[in-house]
Each structure stands twice: as C-alpha cells, then as structure tokens.
Image (cartoon, rainbow, N blue to C red):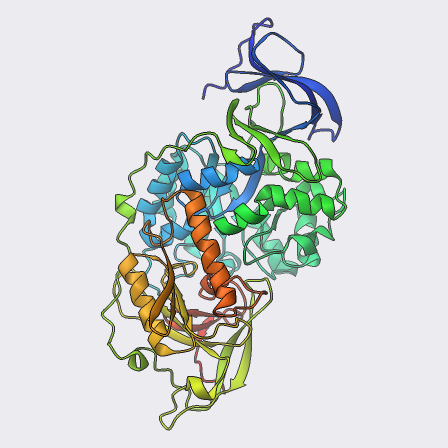
Amino acid sequence: MDSTLKTDQDARADLRIDNARHVNVFTGEVEWTSLCVKDGLVLGFEPREAEEVLDAGGAYILPGLIDAHVHIESSLLTPERFAELVLPRGVTTVIADPHEIANVAGAAGLRYMIEASCGLPLDIRYMLPSCVPALPPEILNEGVSPLDAGALAPFYDEPGVLGLGEMMNVPGVLNADADVMAKLTEARRRGRVTDGHAPGLDGPDLERYVRAGIKTDHECTTVNEMHNRLRLGMYVALRQGSAARDLSLLLSGLTEGNARRCMFCSDDKHPADILCEGHIDASVRMAVASGIAPGTAVRMATLNAAECYALNDVGALAPGRRANMILVDSLRAFAARKVWSDGRLVAENGAMLAPVATTADSSNVRDSVRLAALPDNPEEVFALRVPSGKARVICLTPHSIVTRQETHAVKVDGDGRFVFDKNPGILKLAVLERHRASGRMGLGLLDKSYGLRDGAIALSIAHDAHNIVVAGDNDSDMLAAVRLVERMQGGIAMLAEGRELAALPLPVAGLMSDAPAHEVAETLQKMLDLAKSHYHISDKADAFMTLSFLALPVIPHLKLTTCGLFDVDKFQIVDIAAE
C-alpha cells in the first residue's frame, strides 16, 4: 500500500468516525474525538467531509492489536485461515516465526508461508527461524535439513521479514558457535531484531546472551525471570497460549515502570481456544481484570510491540499511520465490535465480513509424512527394555511445557521389557522419524500427570522437528494411531480398542489445514472434549499441545526425541534405565 499522505488540507475523507473515545497509547489519555481515514491511512482527528460517516456511540477506538510472537502453524491453520480466526478478535498484526514448517520443509516452507501471507487483511511479519534444526546435528541428529546463515540471508530481502527468530540454541550463543554467531552477526549488520528463547537463564550467562544482540524473550515463567530481563533492556512478551499459560503469574510483577517494555503473545494456541477464549484480546481482558490500568494494557497490546520491532506504521492511531483499528464498547469486556484493516472494515461482531482468498500454492509442502515400514506386531514395534527396573520418567508441570525428570521403579517381564498391566497409569511415549523414512524411533515413559487411559493419541506435530509423537496405554492402539496419521499425511489421531474415535487431517506439511477455521476449531474442540470424557486426560494439560511439546529438547528438563531421551540440563541423550 502507498503510505504517502496527500497534503491537501481539504481532502475529503473516505471514512469519518464520530462520537468515539480514542485511547491514546502515546499519552494514556482517553479523548472524545472524531477520526478520519483516507486511502487506508489515518488522516487526523479534526472532522471533515467524508464518503462514509459512522457514529461510534461512545465506543472506544483503538489501534489494532499485535501478537508479539506466534507460530501460525500451531493454530493448525494456513495463514489465510488463521487470518479469518484472529481478525474478528481485533488482532491486525502478528510477528510470526515459521520455524515449525521450516523444520519440515526447509526453505520451501519459508517461501510458502511468505507467499501465503501476501495481500492478506492480517499484517503478518516474519522472523527467520534461527534454529532449524532445534539442536545442531552433532548434538542431536533428527534428520532435519539445516538452515544455516547462508540459507537464511536471502530471505531478509523478502517482503514482511523483520529479523531473526527465537534463538533457542543458548549454549551455541554462550560458546560462540560459528553458525550461531554468523546468524546473529547478519541480523545485526542489517539492523534487524533478534528474538530470544532462554528459559531459566540468569546472571552472567544472561548478560552474555543479551550482549550477543538478542532483544526479546517470551519464555519467562517467573516474575524474577521477567524482571531480570527487563533490567537488562530486553522486551518481554507475556505468553498466554494453550499449553503454556504464564500471563496470570507474570502480571503480578507488572508495574507502571516496567510495563513499557512488556508485550502480549500467544506463541502456540489452538483454534478451539482462540474461538472460546480469544487471542490477544483475551490477554488484555486478563490484564485489566488483574488491576492493570486499561490504557497500560492496550499499550502492551499495541505500541510496545510496534516499537520493539520498529513498525512505525502500526501500533497507534496517529496521522500517517495505517488505519488498522478496532472499536470496543468496554475496555474491561474488551470485545471487538468492528475491525478495520488499512481502513477497510473486515470483521464485525466477532465474524469476518468476507472469506479471505487463498492464492499460495501449497503443493511443495504436502505429502510430507514418510515413515519406514513398521512390523505388524505392535509389541515388537514398541518394545521398551528397562533391565534395571528403574526408569527415567517424564513428568508434567501443570499448565506448562516445562517437564520434570523422576526415577521410578517399574515392573518388567522376564526379558526386562516394560509391561503395561504391571504399571498402571504409566504410559509409553514414542517419537518416530517421519521425514526420510529412516526408521529411527525414541521410546520413553510418561507418568500419571498426563492421565491418558484406554487408548492412544498420535500427532504429526512434535516440536520442533515435527516427527510423529504417540502416547498410549497399549501397544496396539499406539501402532494404529501412528498408521492413521501416516494415511492422512499428517494430523491428529485418537484410537481406542482398535477403533478410530476421532481424527483431524493436517495435510499442509503435516501441521496445518486449509479448511475453514471454524470447521477445524469445531473438530478440534470435539476431540479435546473426547480427551477428557474418554481418555480422562488431566485438566492441567492440553491433550494435544502438551503431547507435542514432549519432543522439544530446548525446554527443560527431560524430553523425548527420535534418538531417545534428552536431558536438557546435561544437554545430552540419556538412557531410559536409571542408575
């Protein structure tokens, strides 16, 4: 869009909104005013003749909301369908890191996401994935084609690319790994932002991490972590996703002094949760309900993120800025009555006014599930030997993607194999390589904190390599679930006693659906309900997203990969048999 303002002071506006209360994110004031829009830009606040006049009836006019860090793929929707989901909730800009699809399809995946985002009413800006694969092959070889500094460099010239995505390889930063340094140097040379990802990092190591040029972090799970990052000049994105729900706790550490460096983000949020709870609008509601001043909450959802990422055309309503804006009747209830993108009304009363067109070719990111042939005998496929009778077991932390490592005495048969019947409540967990049909598979145990019983669940979403992860209380359903995911060429499968309970195909990279957002959300909600009613999965876990994060070896403390159990604290593969 041409952002050049005409200087004709008598220009007739395209739209004038009268009788509105403008929440000024620069000053915190709330002012009764008119607002005029022309050619997709804010013309000003002085009333003038207009083609269309809207009486706001005393409602609040605000800048469109910004999600400071999101993985669109985690919504299980393509960019077009994701736009249809979040725009009605007042979100007009997102800062997206496409490292999920990059781990599946490499540069072709990045190209697809950028092309699919062009021309959408949702302003999608991209951070280039810094850690594909999540860990270097010499530490953990999961078969994902690396995107090194040279492969990323050309993408900086693509429209909408802002900078370098979350730097999860904290040891690589602290040890000055050559490729990590090359990526950080290139981002700094180009004057671009680099996002962080450093759970638990503190003291001199945190200072070294910041010195490397890393500006943000969204992994704070304690107020102390948040304060330490803010004191060093970082921006902190307060996360409220499906599995990781950190916002409520972090809001307790927010002050008028430090809120200026805080933003809201969703990171990973399922469409059913967005439909039910909301998106960044839900974070604003939570903040205001916790006692945060409404003006401060709105600023965190708009201007703070815009300034962090040097987006000087969004994040506020001011002359010359893009007319991305929302109208809400209450700053406490905070529901978008109307949403404009570049001055065009795109959503009203929680619904899109028209479908978003699909133009990108997804053929290069389909047919991505390639499993090695598996034996027909499920007990042979998932045979798990613990000769010592003492096993390292993955334990969940409520409403978090951080896990614990515990040692459990487990009962085994005469060959030292784990036996379900003798270990009630303990589940088998498997991660199967699905990109190159290598046949590589890691096996582990998951404690009662997940709660699944009477069946198995399998997904082709297993952060960040996105192999197939499956959990179950019997080998037969585990194998059937994996095979269903393979037949669907990606998705979520729920099996019990050999029969399919529910399935959600995700054919785009095994991560996303191009079906309408409400259809995907409705299917997913039914599956989440089934996870509670049939499998009895804990209320303290998200049935699918929690499972998907059990394969992410950059979040403490014990995770499962295709190469086996990974001890994040020791940063190495460990045997399931404990000493």
